[in-house]
Amino acid sequence: MNNVFSTDLLLRIVARSWMPLVWAAGACTVHNPAVCCETESECAAVGFADPQVCQDGVCVANSCAATGCDGDEDCDSTLPHCVGGTCTAGCDGDEDCIDPNFPRCIDNVCSIDCDLTGGKIVFSSDRDGDDDLYTMFGDGSGLMTAAPSAAFERSPRWSADGQRLSFMRDAAGRFDVFVSASDGSNPSNLTNSSDDDSDPSWSPDGSMIAFTATPATSTKPFAKVMNADGSNVHELTSVAGADGREPVWSPDGTKLAFVASDPTSGTSSLWIVGSDGVSGKLHLQTSGVSHPRWSPDGRSLAFISNASGGKDVWLSNATGTNIAPIAITQEDELEVEWSPDGTQLAFVRDTSGNRDVWVVAIDGSGARNVSNANGADEHPRWSPDSAFLIFESNRDGNREVYRASRDGSASVNLTRDPASDSAPDITRCPANP
Image 1 (tube, rainbow, N blue to C red):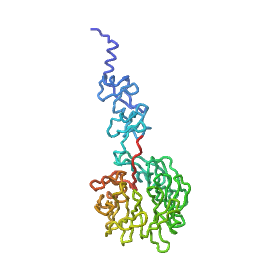
Image 2: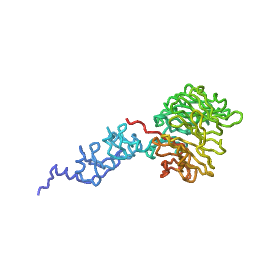
Image 3: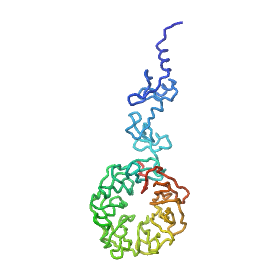
Image 4: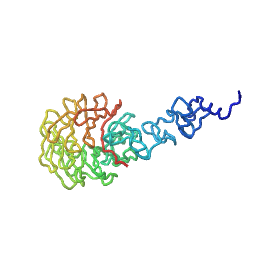
């Protein structure tokens, strides 16, 4: 028997020896002697217990190659993109995305299909110690921080195209109106004044923002309008000869509705005026008004009024005619929102301190409780397709963002965090690239 091993036989024995993976120099690698490779098939022939891949010319365990990550910065040049907590090689088109949870190729990364989740949500949360903004998809997936800072961010609102955010940021004990990109980058202080600024409202074309300004030396608010870059600030309030608050844009962007209080009686009523703050002045003769909202076609307004004794949902033509409550109830209604398809109204009803989100047809029929829980369910917003609503609720002991179908058949906690999550807003998904 020949006692001399051939070179080929020796290499095959070494190649089939168990070579454990170790963590070295910040990377998964095979303990020396390394098993070199050019293809996956060479790694499969080695016979390791774990599935192998060929990475940087070395066979490594697949579980080690698929490195966990929080962002692209955690990934290397071989698997450069962080998708769903895993470093991946990226994609050139949807056909490269074989994981059904990430079917869309966006910016060379296999991503969630936003359209299938129902939209994009932004909300305020103190989970990191102060109120910062967070975004997620309509089903609660894809949570990301937006506009993190040491200040407090509240009342976020999407622009109509979903590409920008407006929000309130606490600056030296007062709030200013800020605007940022949809991911919170490039925040810009638009008001930067001594006033306390709130209620930012985007014009439909995104070129202007209306807001409420309360001077530091007064409790009297003023409704104002400015360009989306903070220029050309002017008041709407001078039309009413009183204070002004809660300005909201008509769907065509030519007019605003806002609430003003009579300087003598203090009774609040609804006004409509052109975006210049002068033209088209119209005073709707109502009392105790709050929360005005335009119908999607711009022909009607919904609002809360106590003209009938309690707080009820009222409707009016945009011309100021046919002003009437949808229904007069024993409970108080506190907020109202039109569905994007114009057929339904969502509102908050307070029953002995318990607040629920209700939905009703615009003719007053079919009223139903869609949130139906003990606690305070508030600030409803419709999904872009009118299929469901999001709202905040404290039913679990802290504020969370919930989603409920318009018929009330399902209610789901989207945030599930012990912090306080509030003031959600939802927009349609950005256009597909």
